[in-house]
Length: 361
View 1 (spheres, rainbow, N blue to C red):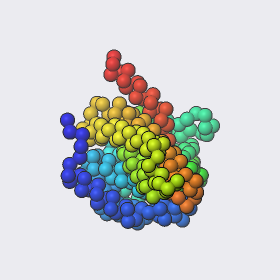
View 2 (view 1 turned 45 degrees about the vertical axis):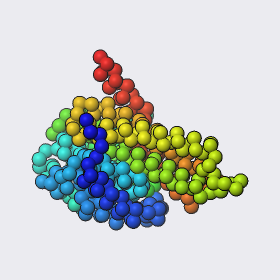
View 3 (view 1 turned 90 degrees about the horizontal axis):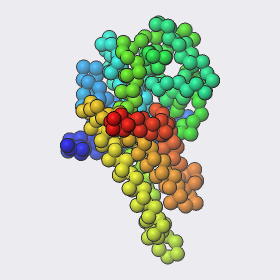
View 4 (view 1 turned 90 degrees about the vertical axis):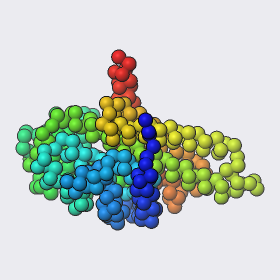
């Protein structure tokens, strides 16, 4: 079984990396973080025009028709460069929910617009948490009411796929009765919003909502794991480079064993996460029955790796690592954001444990 990528796939990754290195700069990330734009439009349009964002959407719906493996490599580069774009909400989740559970009419109505970049989409597919003390979404077959919080890219999105009870519903966010309220978050470069619905027209996706939601979330977990692997690898590189430049007591600080051991531990965690992400990529692309297990393992390992690398990156940079001018905090913000985007690390550990118990039985 081959867990590596082909030369053609690596070429796609290289092309995306070069584009993001030129456009998804610290300045671009900070501009979105400061609220100057809901996302980096130049980066987003480049990903659309290259067919990178649409890699997993079939050509009949306006996508590139490449596959999930190619999208995994795009995700890794998006994480590496902290791309402030609605890639996960539009393509990992919303478009995938339409592909897996939508009717042919729904797919043809919405997917070409998403693939062309004319429409930002978002999705909340996990069950609502009861302790939030907000009215849950209710869907009576044609009308949606209620509130959903922490919707990624909710302020910019024109379409949402939401879980209402046992159903997945499709709602046009330009319709009357939709109220959007921006919400503060630790990573403003990936802004969130609260959406309130007051008798808003909506369509049910003709599928088993729980089954399709689980499938899409598992696929999203694999893709987010690649983003986390890309981010953790990059912050480790930045930290390593700094230790080779910074001098103390007449020598490079990278020569001290304490920092060598610290970075060796981070590298080990990153490579463990990468191995799990590769396994998840195979399971996703092959529609393998191991997807739920592989996705959970990738999610847990990549969350731990990115959080660890981001935290230690600040420490390795010493006193300047805590300053606003350094980019260390940008990686920490993104690590924390991705860690909770589709469920906490604990929730994915529970899924992994359940899958292992089921496999053993």
